[in-house]
Image (cartoon, rainbow, N blue to C red; front, side, top):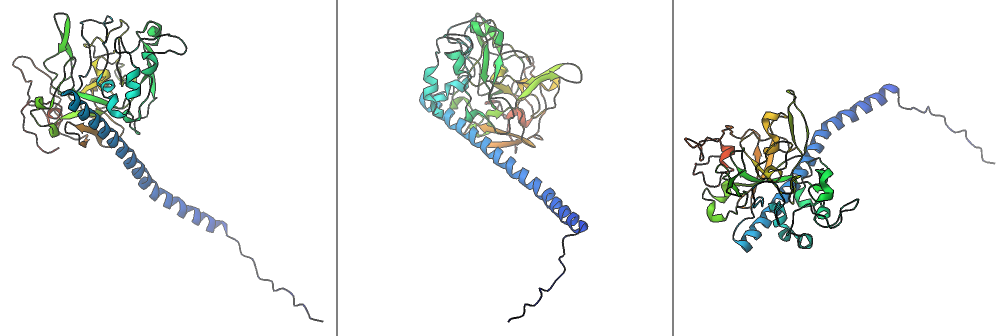
Length: 352
Protein backbone atom coordinates (compact mmCIF):
# COMPACT_ATOMS: atom_id res chain seq x y z
CA UNK A 1 0.00 0.00 0.00
CA UNK A 2 1.38 3.33 -1.11
CA UNK A 3 2.10 5.73 1.61
CA UNK A 4 0.56 9.16 1.21
CA UNK A 5 3.03 11.82 2.10
CA UNK A 6 1.59 14.74 3.97
CA UNK A 7 1.18 17.90 1.86
CA UNK A 8 3.93 20.31 2.50
CA UNK A 9 2.71 23.37 4.19
CA UNK A 10 4.12 26.57 2.85
CA UNK A 11 3.22 29.86 4.35
CA UNK A 12 0.68 31.83 2.25
CA UNK A 13 1.67 35.46 1.94
CA UNK A 14 -0.91 38.18 1.10
CA UNK A 15 -0.38 41.86 0.36
CA UNK A 16 0.30 44.00 3.32
CA UNK A 17 -1.57 47.25 3.81
CA UNK A 18 1.57 49.22 3.00
CA UNK A 19 2.03 47.33 -0.29
CA UNK A 20 -1.57 48.00 -1.28
CA UNK A 21 -1.20 51.68 -0.50
CA UNK A 22 1.98 51.86 -2.58
CA UNK A 23 0.26 50.21 -5.57
CA UNK A 24 -2.74 52.55 -5.27
CA UNK A 25 -0.42 55.53 -5.07
CA UNK A 26 1.43 54.40 -8.21
CA UNK A 27 -1.87 53.96 -10.08
CA UNK A 28 -3.02 57.42 -8.95
CA UNK A 29 0.22 58.99 -10.18
CA UNK A 30 -0.14 57.25 -13.56
CA UNK A 31 -3.73 58.46 -13.89
CA UNK A 32 -2.67 61.98 -13.00
CA UNK A 33 0.02 61.83 -15.67
CA UNK A 34 -2.28 60.37 -18.32
CA UNK A 35 -5.38 62.49 -17.66
CA UNK A 36 -4.02 65.72 -19.22
CA UNK A 37 -2.96 63.77 -22.31
CA UNK A 38 -6.43 62.23 -22.60
CA UNK A 39 -8.06 65.63 -22.17
CA UNK A 40 -5.76 67.13 -24.79
CA UNK A 41 -6.62 64.32 -27.20
CA UNK A 42 -10.33 64.89 -26.66
CA UNK A 43 -9.95 68.64 -27.13
CA UNK A 44 -7.97 68.02 -30.32
CA UNK A 45 -10.75 65.76 -31.62
CA UNK A 46 -13.41 68.33 -30.77
CA UNK A 47 -11.38 71.10 -32.40
CA UNK A 48 -10.96 68.95 -35.52
CA UNK A 49 -14.72 68.36 -35.71
CA UNK A 50 -15.28 72.08 -35.32
CA UNK A 51 -12.85 72.77 -38.16
CA UNK A 52 -14.62 70.21 -40.33
CA UNK A 53 -17.95 71.92 -39.67
CA UNK A 54 -16.50 75.23 -40.81
CA UNK A 55 -15.07 73.59 -43.92
CA UNK A 56 -18.57 72.27 -44.73
CA UNK A 57 -19.97 75.77 -44.31
CA UNK A 58 -17.20 77.11 -46.53
CA UNK A 59 -17.98 74.63 -49.30
CA UNK A 60 -21.66 75.48 -49.02
CA UNK A 61 -20.96 79.21 -49.24
CA UNK A 62 -18.71 78.73 -52.27
CA UNK A 63 -21.29 76.54 -54.00
CA UNK A 64 -23.92 79.17 -53.28
CA UNK A 65 -21.62 81.76 -54.84
CA UNK A 66 -21.03 79.55 -57.89
CA UNK A 67 -24.79 79.34 -58.40
CA UNK A 68 -25.77 82.93 -57.58
CA UNK A 69 -22.50 84.79 -58.28
CA UNK A 70 -22.69 86.34 -54.80
CA UNK A 71 -22.56 85.16 -51.21
CA UNK A 72 -25.90 85.19 -49.35
CA UNK A 73 -26.87 88.40 -47.58
CA UNK A 74 -26.44 88.32 -43.83
CA UNK A 75 -30.07 89.15 -43.05
CA UNK A 76 -33.12 90.20 -45.05
CA UNK A 77 -34.95 93.24 -43.67
CA UNK A 78 -36.64 95.19 -46.43
CA UNK A 79 -38.77 97.78 -44.62
CA UNK A 80 -37.60 100.05 -41.79
CA UNK A 81 -39.15 99.27 -38.42
CA UNK A 82 -40.22 95.99 -36.89
CA UNK A 83 -43.57 95.27 -38.48
CA UNK A 84 -44.13 92.00 -40.31
CA UNK A 85 -43.13 92.16 -43.97
CA UNK A 86 -43.35 89.29 -46.45
CA UNK A 87 -40.11 87.34 -46.57
CA UNK A 88 -38.21 89.30 -43.91
CA UNK A 89 -36.11 87.95 -41.06
CA UNK A 90 -34.21 85.20 -42.92
CA UNK A 91 -30.46 84.81 -42.38
CA UNK A 92 -27.52 83.45 -44.36
CA UNK A 93 -27.69 80.08 -42.61
CA UNK A 94 -30.99 79.14 -44.24
CA UNK A 95 -29.79 80.23 -47.69
CA UNK A 96 -27.03 77.60 -47.82
CA UNK A 97 -29.17 74.64 -46.67
CA UNK A 98 -29.40 73.11 -50.19
CA UNK A 99 -25.59 73.04 -50.30
CA UNK A 100 -25.38 71.23 -46.95
CA UNK A 101 -27.47 68.26 -48.12
CA UNK A 102 -30.48 69.89 -46.48
CA UNK A 103 -32.56 70.61 -49.59
CA UNK A 104 -35.51 68.68 -48.14
CA UNK A 105 -35.54 70.95 -45.09
CA UNK A 106 -35.06 74.07 -47.20
CA UNK A 107 -38.02 73.18 -49.43
CA UNK A 108 -40.34 72.91 -46.44
CA UNK A 109 -39.88 76.53 -45.38
CA UNK A 110 -42.42 79.13 -46.48
CA UNK A 111 -40.26 82.10 -47.45
CA UNK A 112 -43.33 84.18 -48.25
CA UNK A 113 -43.65 84.97 -44.58
CA UNK A 114 -41.43 85.27 -41.51
CA UNK A 115 -39.40 82.47 -39.83
CA UNK A 116 -41.75 82.10 -36.86
CA UNK A 117 -45.13 81.85 -38.62
CA UNK A 118 -47.18 78.77 -37.68
CA UNK A 119 -49.83 76.93 -39.65
CA UNK A 120 -51.32 75.87 -36.34
CA UNK A 121 -49.66 77.26 -33.24
CA UNK A 122 -49.97 75.48 -29.95
CA UNK A 123 -48.38 72.59 -28.12
CA UNK A 124 -47.06 71.17 -31.39
CA UNK A 125 -46.56 74.05 -33.85
CA UNK A 126 -46.23 73.39 -37.55
CA UNK A 127 -44.92 75.37 -40.50
CA UNK A 128 -41.91 77.64 -40.17
CA UNK A 129 -42.11 77.71 -36.38
CA UNK A 130 -41.64 73.95 -36.19
CA UNK A 131 -38.87 73.96 -38.80
CA UNK A 132 -36.72 76.63 -37.11
CA UNK A 133 -36.35 74.26 -34.14
CA UNK A 134 -34.40 71.78 -36.30
CA UNK A 135 -30.79 71.46 -35.04
CA UNK A 136 -28.05 70.83 -37.58
CA UNK A 137 -24.71 69.15 -36.88
CA UNK A 138 -22.91 71.41 -39.36
CA UNK A 139 -23.78 74.38 -37.12
CA UNK A 140 -22.80 72.66 -33.86
CA UNK A 141 -19.29 72.75 -32.40
CA UNK A 142 -18.74 69.86 -29.93
CA UNK A 143 -17.13 72.32 -27.50
CA UNK A 144 -20.11 74.65 -27.50
CA UNK A 145 -22.03 73.44 -24.45
CA UNK A 146 -25.60 74.58 -25.05
CA UNK A 147 -29.14 73.38 -25.71
CA UNK A 148 -29.96 72.39 -29.29
CA UNK A 149 -32.67 75.05 -29.39
CA UNK A 150 -33.88 77.89 -27.18
CA UNK A 151 -37.10 79.87 -26.90
CA UNK A 152 -37.26 83.35 -28.40
CA UNK A 153 -40.10 85.57 -27.21
CA UNK A 154 -42.20 82.46 -26.48
CA UNK A 155 -45.08 84.55 -25.18
CA UNK A 156 -45.66 85.78 -28.74
CA UNK A 157 -45.32 82.36 -30.36
CA UNK A 158 -49.04 81.95 -31.03
CA UNK A 159 -49.01 85.12 -33.14
CA UNK A 160 -45.93 84.09 -35.12
CA UNK A 161 -43.85 86.80 -33.44
CA UNK A 162 -41.91 84.44 -31.21
CA UNK A 163 -40.86 80.82 -30.97
CA UNK A 164 -40.88 78.15 -28.28
CA UNK A 165 -37.74 76.61 -29.80
CA UNK A 166 -35.23 78.15 -32.21
CA UNK A 167 -32.19 76.09 -33.25
CA UNK A 168 -28.90 77.54 -32.07
CA UNK A 169 -25.66 77.91 -34.02
CA UNK A 170 -22.01 77.78 -32.98
CA UNK A 171 -20.99 79.92 -35.96
CA UNK A 172 -21.74 83.48 -37.02
CA UNK A 173 -20.97 85.46 -40.16
CA UNK A 174 -18.38 88.23 -40.10
CA UNK A 175 -19.83 91.74 -40.46
CA UNK A 176 -16.69 93.87 -40.19
CA UNK A 177 -14.18 95.55 -37.86
CA UNK A 178 -16.63 97.89 -36.09
CA UNK A 179 -19.71 97.03 -34.10
CA UNK A 180 -22.42 99.51 -33.28
CA UNK A 181 -25.17 100.38 -35.74
CA UNK A 182 -25.66 97.47 -38.18
CA UNK A 183 -28.09 99.31 -40.47
CA UNK A 184 -29.68 102.70 -41.07
CA UNK A 185 -32.81 103.92 -42.83
CA UNK A 186 -32.65 105.03 -46.45
CA UNK A 187 -36.16 106.38 -46.66
CA UNK A 188 -38.23 103.37 -45.64
CA UNK A 189 -35.56 100.81 -46.59
CA UNK A 190 -32.85 99.53 -44.22
CA UNK A 191 -29.35 99.56 -45.71
CA UNK A 192 -25.98 98.58 -44.21
CA UNK A 193 -24.41 101.35 -42.16
CA UNK A 194 -21.11 102.52 -43.68
CA UNK A 195 -18.97 100.94 -40.95
CA UNK A 196 -20.15 97.42 -41.84
CA UNK A 197 -17.50 96.41 -44.35
CA UNK A 198 -17.42 92.67 -43.69
CA UNK A 199 -18.49 89.77 -45.88
CA UNK A 200 -22.07 89.63 -44.53
CA UNK A 201 -24.45 92.60 -44.39
CA UNK A 202 -28.12 93.58 -44.21
CA UNK A 203 -29.94 93.43 -47.56
CA UNK A 204 -26.63 93.35 -49.40
CA UNK A 205 -24.81 90.46 -51.08
CA UNK A 206 -21.02 90.47 -51.58
CA UNK A 207 -19.17 88.72 -54.40
CA UNK A 208 -15.56 87.59 -54.70
CA UNK A 209 -14.74 90.63 -56.83
CA UNK A 210 -15.68 92.85 -53.89
CA UNK A 211 -13.04 91.22 -51.65
CA UNK A 212 -10.10 93.32 -52.79
CA UNK A 213 -8.02 92.46 -49.71
CA UNK A 214 -7.84 88.85 -50.88
CA UNK A 215 -10.21 86.08 -49.82
CA UNK A 216 -7.47 84.29 -47.86
CA UNK A 217 -7.09 87.39 -45.67
CA UNK A 218 -10.75 87.88 -44.78
CA UNK A 219 -12.97 86.22 -42.19
CA UNK A 220 -16.17 84.68 -43.52
CA UNK A 221 -17.52 82.85 -40.45
CA UNK A 222 -16.25 82.58 -36.89
CA UNK A 223 -17.08 80.68 -33.73
CA UNK A 224 -19.45 81.76 -31.00
CA UNK A 225 -20.30 79.93 -27.80
CA UNK A 226 -23.50 79.88 -25.81
CA UNK A 227 -23.21 82.32 -22.91
CA UNK A 228 -26.42 82.57 -20.87
CA UNK A 229 -27.47 86.10 -20.03
CA UNK A 230 -26.41 87.28 -16.60
CA UNK A 231 -25.29 90.32 -14.63
CA UNK A 232 -21.63 91.24 -14.36
CA UNK A 233 -19.82 92.76 -11.38
CA UNK A 234 -21.34 96.16 -12.19
CA UNK A 235 -24.87 94.68 -12.23
CA UNK A 236 -25.04 95.20 -16.01
CA UNK A 237 -26.45 92.59 -18.39
CA UNK A 238 -24.09 90.48 -20.47
CA UNK A 239 -24.41 87.27 -22.47
CA UNK A 240 -24.62 85.66 -25.89
CA UNK A 241 -27.54 83.26 -26.09
CA UNK A 242 -29.34 84.47 -29.25
CA UNK A 243 -27.35 82.95 -32.09
CA UNK A 244 -29.78 81.34 -34.49
CA UNK A 245 -29.35 79.34 -37.68
CA UNK A 246 -32.31 80.26 -39.81
CA UNK A 247 -33.63 83.70 -38.92
CA UNK A 248 -35.66 85.65 -36.38
CA UNK A 249 -38.23 88.40 -35.89
CA UNK A 250 -39.07 90.72 -33.02
CA UNK A 251 -42.34 90.85 -31.09
CA UNK A 252 -43.48 93.36 -33.70
CA UNK A 253 -43.25 90.66 -36.35
CA UNK A 254 -40.25 91.98 -38.27
CA UNK A 255 -36.46 91.67 -37.83
CA UNK A 256 -35.59 95.32 -36.92
CA UNK A 257 -31.98 95.16 -38.03
CA UNK A 258 -30.73 98.14 -35.99
CA UNK A 259 -31.21 96.35 -32.66
CA UNK A 260 -27.84 95.44 -31.18
CA UNK A 261 -28.28 95.04 -27.41
CA UNK A 262 -27.66 91.94 -25.32
CA UNK A 263 -31.37 91.35 -24.74
CA UNK A 264 -32.49 92.30 -28.26
CA UNK A 265 -33.21 90.43 -31.45
CA UNK A 266 -31.13 91.93 -34.25
CA UNK A 267 -28.40 91.35 -36.81
CA UNK A 268 -26.13 90.08 -34.03
CA UNK A 269 -28.34 86.95 -33.87
CA UNK A 270 -26.51 85.90 -37.06
CA UNK A 271 -23.48 88.18 -37.55
CA UNK A 272 -20.60 89.39 -35.37
CA UNK A 273 -17.85 92.00 -35.47
CA UNK A 274 -14.18 92.04 -34.44
CA UNK A 275 -14.02 95.37 -32.63
CA UNK A 276 -14.04 93.68 -29.23
CA UNK A 277 -11.49 91.11 -28.15
CA UNK A 278 -11.76 87.48 -29.15
CA UNK A 279 -12.82 85.42 -26.10
CA UNK A 280 -13.34 88.54 -24.04
CA UNK A 281 -14.20 88.49 -20.32
CA UNK A 282 -17.73 87.93 -18.98
CA UNK A 283 -18.45 91.62 -18.73
CA UNK A 284 -20.98 93.89 -20.37
CA UNK A 285 -18.13 96.04 -21.73
CA UNK A 286 -16.88 93.04 -23.74
CA UNK A 287 -20.10 93.17 -25.81
CA UNK A 288 -20.19 89.38 -26.01
CA UNK A 289 -23.45 89.50 -27.95
CA UNK A 290 -21.58 91.20 -30.81
CA UNK A 291 -18.23 89.39 -30.51
CA UNK A 292 -16.65 86.08 -31.46
CA UNK A 293 -15.75 83.57 -28.73
CA UNK A 294 -15.31 79.84 -28.23
CA UNK A 295 -14.67 77.18 -25.60
CA UNK A 296 -11.39 76.15 -27.23
CA UNK A 297 -8.30 76.85 -25.18
CA UNK A 298 -6.35 79.82 -26.51
CA UNK A 299 -8.51 81.00 -29.38
CA UNK A 300 -11.20 80.13 -31.91
CA UNK A 301 -11.59 78.68 -35.39
CA UNK A 302 -12.44 80.94 -38.30
CA UNK A 303 -13.50 80.17 -41.85
CA UNK A 304 -11.65 82.40 -44.30
CA UNK A 305 -13.11 83.72 -47.53
CA UNK A 306 -11.11 81.25 -49.62
CA UNK A 307 -12.61 78.27 -47.75
CA UNK A 308 -9.63 77.54 -45.52
CA UNK A 309 -9.99 77.32 -41.73
CA UNK A 310 -7.53 78.96 -39.36
CA UNK A 311 -7.21 78.90 -35.59
CA UNK A 312 -6.90 82.48 -34.37
CA UNK A 313 -5.14 83.04 -31.06
CA UNK A 314 -6.62 85.07 -28.22
CA UNK A 315 -3.37 87.03 -28.32
CA UNK A 316 -3.77 88.24 -31.90
CA UNK A 317 -2.92 91.93 -32.30
CA UNK A 318 -6.08 93.85 -31.44
CA UNK A 319 -6.65 97.56 -30.87
CA UNK A 320 -10.39 97.84 -30.02
CA UNK A 321 -10.62 100.73 -32.49
CA UNK A 322 -14.06 102.33 -32.66
CA UNK A 323 -15.54 103.86 -35.80
CA UNK A 324 -15.25 107.61 -36.29
CA UNK A 325 -17.27 109.25 -39.03
CA UNK A 326 -15.37 112.51 -39.46
CA UNK A 327 -12.54 112.41 -40.20
CA UNK A 328 -13.39 108.84 -41.17
CA UNK A 329 -11.23 105.94 -40.03
CA UNK A 330 -13.32 103.47 -42.04
CA UNK A 331 -10.22 101.75 -43.44
CA UNK A 332 -8.18 101.93 -40.27
CA UNK A 333 -5.64 101.98 -38.96
CA UNK A 334 -6.63 99.24 -36.55
CA UNK A 335 -5.23 95.95 -35.27
CA UNK A 336 -4.74 92.70 -37.16
CA UNK A 337 -7.86 91.10 -35.72
CA UNK A 338 -10.00 93.94 -37.07
CA UNK A 339 -8.17 93.95 -40.40
CA UNK A 340 -9.17 90.32 -40.94
CA UNK A 341 -12.88 91.15 -40.88
CA UNK A 342 -12.72 93.97 -43.46
CA UNK A 343 -12.96 92.90 -47.10
CA UNK A 344 -11.49 96.00 -48.72
CA UNK A 345 -9.73 98.26 -46.22
CA UNK A 346 -6.49 98.14 -48.24
CA UNK A 347 -4.27 97.64 -45.19
CA UNK A 348 -1.22 95.41 -45.48
CA UNK A 349 -1.81 92.34 -43.35
CA UNK A 350 1.13 90.83 -41.50
CA UNK A 351 1.48 87.42 -39.88
CA UNK A 352 -1.36 86.20 -37.71
